[in-house]
Image (cartoon, helix red, strand yellow):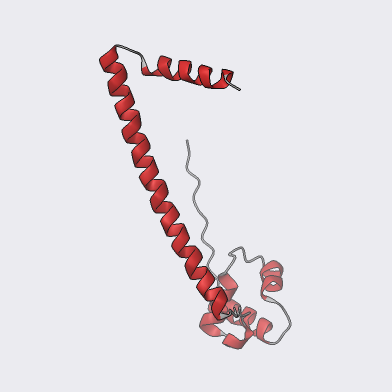
Length: 127
C-alpha cells in the first residue's frame, strides 16, 4: 500500500499577526477567524494568541469550588483508586483460579472447555 504524505501548513508571521489583530480588535472571533481563513488546527489560533496577542483576548475558564466540592472530588478520586486496586486484585485471583481449574482438569483427565460448557448448561437450566 502507498503511504499518504501528511501535509504541514506553515503560516507567515504577517498572516499570524493579522489574525491576532483582527481578533483583538473584535472584528473576528477565534472560531470565526479559523473558518474565514481555513485554518484547520483546532488550537492553532489560540497558540498564536498566547505567543503574540494580549492574553485578555483569550477566553478564560474560571472554576469556582466550595470547600465541600474539593473534599468530595478528593474523596471520589480516593474511591476510584481503591476500586481500581480491588479490580486488579480480583483479576489476579481470577487468573489464579482459572489456572488451578485447568490443572485439576488435567489431573482428572478432563477437557476444561467441556467442563465449562457442562457447568454453564447446568446453571442456565436452574430457575
